[in-house]
Length: 485
Image (cartoon, rainbow, N blue to C red; front, side):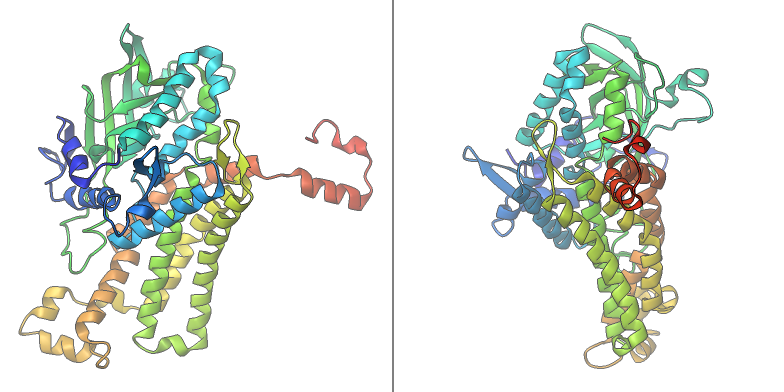
C-alpha cells in the first residue's frame, strides 16, 4: 500500500546510526541539515494521497493503489505515466531531487532480466530478486542504490591491499552472509533499504569471488553506520539560497562492519558472471528517470535565465535569443532522446518494456556532456549581478533598503524584492557551492563519462553503418569475417 509522508518519517525511527559534522544524529527527521530533504521525500509520499495529484502519482490494481514510479513497465504508457509523475513532482517541490526510489528500482529490474544467469548458480537468487521487486511495489519503501566503493589503490587488486576497500563476504552462516566494506550512497541515511552490488566490471577469468555479491541491505541493520558529508541546508540564509536549503540530497559513506545479510536478501553471491551482467546492464532502466531529472534541471536553468533577460528587456536582442535557442536545443535534445527511446522500446529478456538502449544511453551522454556548457551560458545570460548582489538582509535593513529599492527596481512590474529573489535562485542554481556540487555529482550519480560512453558503444548497432559502407564500396563478404552479427 502507498505510504503517507508521516509513515515514511516514522519508518526512519528505527535505531539507525547516522553521523554528520562529527556528531551522531538522534533523529534525521528533525536534524537541520536532513530535515528539508526528508520533508521533500515525505511530500512526494503525500502526493500519492493528495486528491489533486493522486491519479498522476499512483495506479490502481486489484482495488489497491501503488506508486507509479515502482510500477513494472510493460507498455509505452507506463513510461509516459512515469514521466508525468516526475514532472509533477519536481514542479511541486520547486527543485530537482535525484534519489527518491523510482530511479533505483530499475536496477533491480535489470538483474531480474538476468534470472537465467542467476539460476545457473542457485535458483533461490532469481526467486529472491523477483520477490523483492514485488515487495517494493507492495510496501513502497524508499529504496536507494549502493554502488561505489572507496576502492583504495586502483592499481592493485582488492586482495593485495586492505580487502575492505571493496565490499566482500567474510563468512557464511546458516542465517546468511556477513559482509564488510563501505559504499558511497546518496540519501542512504534517510532511506529504508539499498540494492548493493559490486563496482568491478572486469573479473578476468575468475569464476568465484567473495567480491561478487549483490544483496539488499537495510539501513538500520546492526553494523551499518552512515557517515555523511556536510549538508548545505542552514549554511547560508534560505532567502538567498532557496535550493541549497530545500533540495540538497545528503551523500553518505555507508560503513558495513560485519553486517549479516539474510539468505532471502541475497540476490547473487560468488557468481562473477552475474556480477558482470549487472555491471553491464545496471542502467538499462534507471538511466531513463535519471536523464529525465536532467531534463527538469534544464527547464529550471532555462527558466532562471529567461526571466533574468526578460526583466531587463534583453530578450529582444538577437544575440540573447541565440543563446536561449542553444539552451532550448540542448533541452529538446534530451526530450527527444527520452521520447524516442520509448517510441522504439523493445521487450527485455524477462518481458518488460525496455527503452531503446542506444537512444537512451546516447541521450544520457548528450544531457551530461553539455551540462557544464549550458550552465555557463545561463550565467552569461543572467549576467554578473548573480555574483555581486547583496543578501536579503541588506534589502530589508532600514539603513540600506532605500538604496536597494532604488537600484534594483526597474518598473512597477519588476520591483526590488522580486529581482532579489530571481537573482538568488539563479545564483544558487548556477554559482553556489550547491551548484558546483550538483555539477560534480553527475560524475558519480550514474557512472563517470567513460562508462557512459562505453554503454553507448555496447548498445549502438554498428552493423548498419558497416553494411552501408560495405555495399557502397563494393567490398567482398570476406571482409566481414565472423564479425557480422
